[in-house]
Image (cartoon, rainbow, N blue to C red; front, top):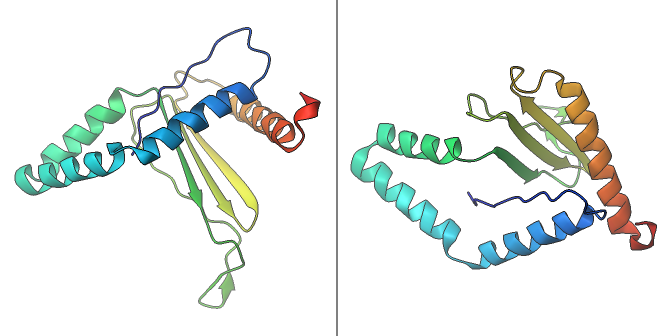
Length: 149
């Protein structure tokens, strides 16, 4: 688990700047000891205090974040389970105390975006999903050909 601050500044016309900033922060965090240290602390708490305390700690961490994004890379070629071809792989979680949880799974060159939204806070999740889709397509277009920005 990496905790990453996400900043949004109105008036910035190039959305790829946000992606570049987040990518730079993630690269620094990958090289740091944050993830191994977090894992080790969690492992020690789990072994010393048990699952209830470890679960409470994890829940408190998640409670103090705005949203969760996971990106899982799936198989790059077709796979078969019990003689049936696997067309989609979906990973999800529930009961997180967030208004938005996003999961992205890349499988055989196709990316599947799942959005879990709290209806009390986000009354029309289909509009939100369309906004994410448009933003991701725009960033992809800019990343493929920077002259289009």
